[in-house]
Amino acid sequence: QLQLVESGGGLVQPGGSLRLSCAASGSIFSIYERGWYRQAPGKQRELVARMTSGGITNYADSVKGRFTISRDNAKNTVYLQMNNLKPEDTAVYYCNHAGRYGSIRYWGQGTQVTVSS
Image (spheres, rainbow, N blue to C red):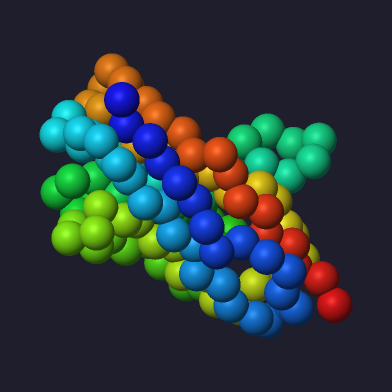
C-alpha cells in the first residue's frame, strides 16, 4: 500500500513562512488527486489545497494568495508552501492522496504547524 510521510511543520511567528513536504512510497499509479488538509483543536478537518493529476488546483478561500501546492514527480513528493502565516493557520496538517471518485484514499500522519508570537 501507499505510505505518506509528512515533514516541515514547526513553530513560526505571524508573517513567517513554512514549507511542508509529503513523500509518497509505493504505487501511485491510481492516484488522481493530491492535497493538504488541516484540523485545529475542536474543529473539523478542512481542505487547504488540492491538485489533480491534470494540474487543476483548488484552495480554501482563507489561504488563497498565501499558500501554494506543488509537486516533484521525480521525488514522488507534494509540497505546501505557506507564506504570510497567521495565528488562525495553527493546526495539524495532513497530506492526502486519493483515487478518482474517492475510490481509495491515503493519509499521512500529520505535522503540527503553530503560528504564534
